[in-house]
Image (cartoon, rainbow, N blue to C red; front, side, top):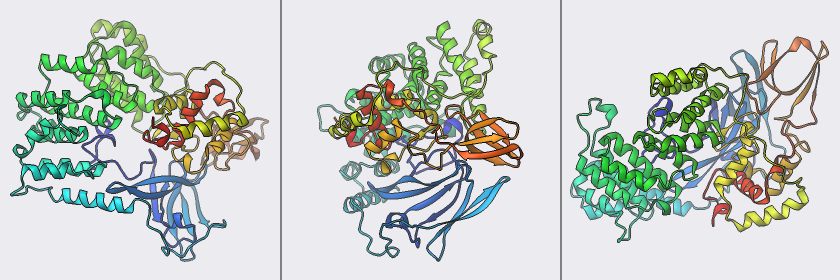
Length: 586
């Protein structure tokens, strides 16, 4: 794949079909030392794990590898966390213990030793290790991908039938193999395969939408120069070919496509319009007529990508739909996508929609991000202001000049009380309901947001970081355990996230988590929903510090949900961010 550095909105999302995702994505952080568990006197799964340190968030992850089609995927388990714990490096010693160091940027340095004292059998390193499940299928998939990679150069004597057989082989299903198939097509003369790509969407034939979409993406990419390398637009694609590709794509039944296929299809439209230019008026009308009734879909990433195309085509209905999506989006990451797309829209705005949109930029001043985050938001706002008329700029000036008051985060409005649930009544409901399947991924995500879980916890690369990352919670909690931790968060508090009560010499008291130590200053997080609002306490002014017996996580989070919403929430939380989990199968 191509992993070149891209800045800001130029970054390719992991789901784009013309790139590849990483083996494991733990979200934002500051990566430092890494090491395999080889030689550690730990249980077998940790001997095979890849340990990675994150300085910023004070966490060490154990990444467990497993077959994933023709490659592998990693699942990150939070192995060690502390507050603060600025991890710098890690090594497995000759004594079988793990050693790691902390420090840097004027933080306290330290050397720690990690040993295992549990009851699990600790095998000799790499002895009697069973082959992981799926190894045979993985080997066959890898062989198919490597066969495709042999076609990543012009191949004399290759027939159209042989090429098409290779790129549509049954094992060409995982992302890496699909990428290899598309690249194989791009290295061969398009005259050899263009007609087959255009015919693959024929509804009267037995076709494969995934093969069709990736083949048409390849045809689009090789039939016109990339504008980034052709700024004068001298090599725009042939309008006649654009019409053929649009016609082929239009034959796909959008309603029957999976989420992944919808994302891939939308990406083809983006690349097609980017490289071939604005469609004709008739082509534009035909596209809008097909996709306006389907938008929004309720699928977060699909809606984000489709909105970009609607804005590019200057659809007069995009403003109302986009602003509604922006207002209802549960995380700042999702909101950023909609706000970024809408900044270039000129059509369809009303006074109320303009006000709502630009008020978002006021709220976004309180959001948390890296050093460049605020600059990116300001750049988006500046782009949006160029679409305003002189009269609109005057009318909107109070909002455009408005400053946010205090720290903030994405917090949903209060919901009506449903009932006070108990563990005894919910356990049988959840155990039966999750086994039955048929849960709704998107509704689960909305329930996760409605209970303000995203405000504190990171999940599937969205949300806050004040609490533990819950993406891999299924590896640590059963449904019953998870329910109990939600219903009674103070029953058992992890020492990694435990709050402290600080009494000062001047008679004051502060309760929260110590998130940073710098000289005489202690930074205390007192409100999990306002991670930017830190309280500073001087260490020289501390009289006493003791652990708090009350969790910073509020109780009663489920009291505003129905039983169906609780089932969707639990399925979403235990699903590791995988919408194809058996819990969501109809």
